[in-house]
Length: 228
Image (tube, rainbow, N blue to C red; front, side, top):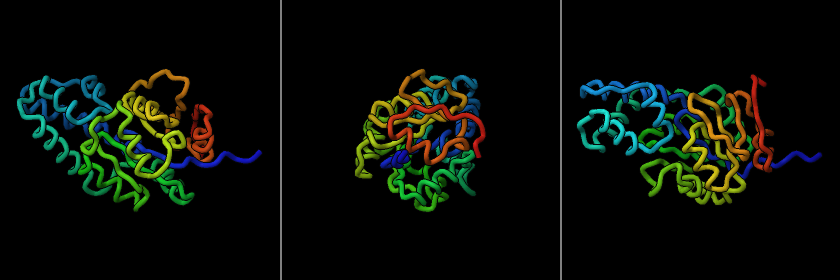
């Protein structure tokens, strides 16, 4: 049987999917709220995973951070950037899969709710693997709206239906599915939606190029266990 062709492109989420930064966001959110005399729980931070930064700012204001939204975003971003000054905190298997796709000639895009100034470490460490970057401050409608993924596919010159989106959050999965792309969700602390169209992996270490080809061809896979 002839192997399925590789996706026309792979569209990557950033935080939590490619890089292990969600814990950094929660720590810095909690620190900023505490500095302003408010309270912030683990569940508060978990509820924001994958959402746009203005949503973060509104939630922190409601928790007692008496600062303008732009200043909240700027303070959080500065702290996250400082904590990644050496290199990106790549998720297990992420850098290797990005490199394998690049070697196979598959175009890749970085599609994130984070602003462009937060994408630097991953873009730098990927050594040119990302042909397109679509950050949250350069779209009109953030995830779960499909606009970011539709824009990435358009800039790569491919149909979204021929792409595989790799995500880890409910809002990101919703955006990917709404764009018409095939979606692979990587399990994390956030409960994923129960959707018959959704492929799931317990780690990027379990994902191979032929898995992405099968997903792009319309199969729905469940990838579990260390297959390396």
